[in-house]
Image (tube, rainbow, N blue to C red; front, side, top):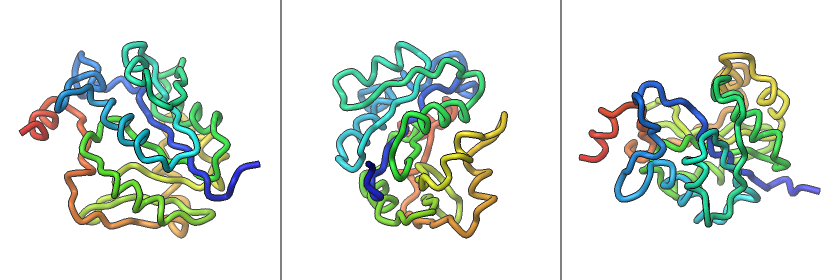
Length: 193
């Protein structure tokens, strides 16, 4: 039987990163280690999660989780987009909450993650925002399990947030750099400097 407080982390690392070009951006070095390893290390170090699921499609990315207390799950249909990684992660989880982490936010801070976890309530969706712009990671109550499992082709968790605005709790983050993600080489260059 699960506790009503337990949160599972679902790390999304199976995308094609088309805007990044030919390189798999999750393997690109940033401050001494591959980009995805920053998220893996942060989430693993927090001790806040019942289980950590690392959803990936590439063997080289999967290898980044070696030695960490995570469950690696192969996404065999990455061409289906992020919704397939979400479906795979939620299917594996028995948590009362799911917290979705993209693996391209290398400056994400433990305090930001903890502030989101502290806001969780049954039936909620918790998101961070800076200057009024929502970001990730995002926490969903298991009340949304069926909707997360049945996202349509091209669907995204933000569609669920739009259908349930009354459930959304926003944590205002005072400094936005920790939420910055890396979508293309120019963003990576800007963060490196």
